[in-house]
Image 1: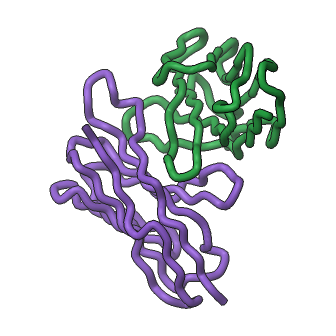
Image 2: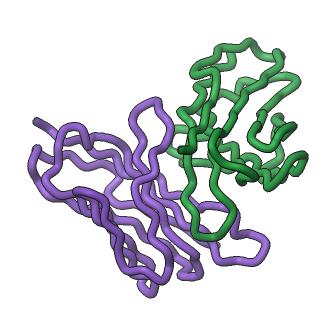
Length: 113
Length: 115
């Protein structure tokens, strides 16, 4: 069966520090991978998606970047965090195809202080 | 532009009640609609996916329907239990060239089932 791992679960970082959140998927190959941010009252916002190794599409301009160094690994990064980067970050994957389910990790609560 | 709305934003019911959560969308050009559950501070759990050609999907006490022409989906929960308390989110996948990898999300319905 397929599983998705996302870590860490919580993170408190000072303004200006770097960020690295990691997500890995097991039990499938060549998945589509996604990073979302969820803010209270604003719903889920798609940040990045990837259809293959090294292929990253950005949905919104921001202080963040994403990378996919391996088929089932997706990393969200920042060189210098801003207060506005605080939020709940979710990684997701799905099998390629239009009628496939999306599955989510347990999320990372990031607080920038 | 596709917009997804979920009403009500919050719902509180006594245990054992059957209930319906609503999701509406403005553009019927979709591939599918997916319902999720989110517990506080946790990730999302996929409940049901309905393809645009389908009318409903069932899983245990959950039944989701889709009326694409009217832009509506409902999630029916039978014999609700306190463990059903969570936020329920719906999302649609656009049928749009170059843009079909995205899900468009509602803001969710926060459900509390009281013992």
